Length: 246
View 1: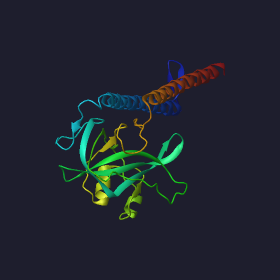
View 2: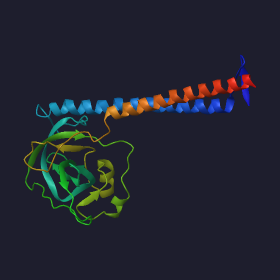
View 3: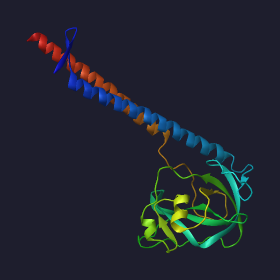
View 4: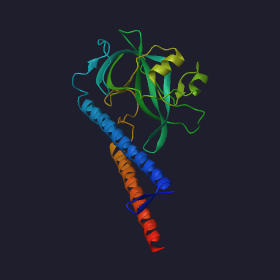
């Protein structure tokens, strides 16, 4: 089937398929640009608050509002010595390991503040967990607030391990973890300051794909869309040329 327009025949089926492919690729390109803008905002927020981390952090023991993403905070309390978490599959300098998340019972609240204390190397055997120690006295710490990613769910593996401490989890999402383990906790995590006298290896940076990669992917999708249109145009020209020569 073909459509005749001013003596040029355009294959309808091939044209529809090409058009749909181009629309999809253009949408994917703009989606990547949108993701790039979101990631750039994430890095900008981190850099801004990281630079301000030593200047007037807000006191979580006193404020009632929810702190902003990467906002510098200070908190006082005691760590739960029994219940803490290992976030699995954390790579540092090419070595596999875990992030250690302790639960700080705030002195003025009835909830715990999850605190990422940093990275520890994984033991040789998967069945083993690292030996770690949490401060056993009252502490006052500073850190940056990390909000959990949206639209991510806790693995069912966690439900099978309830009652065993410490816990190894695939990722730490405070609200879901609080529900599974029945622990009242705040809906965000504090990244312990790299200057703190306790904790483990800490090299905080947003652990996401940088905006430059999203921009590169967007360019690829737009290039593919243009290539599809060019190929289709050449195909139409060739078909019509062959018709004229017959």
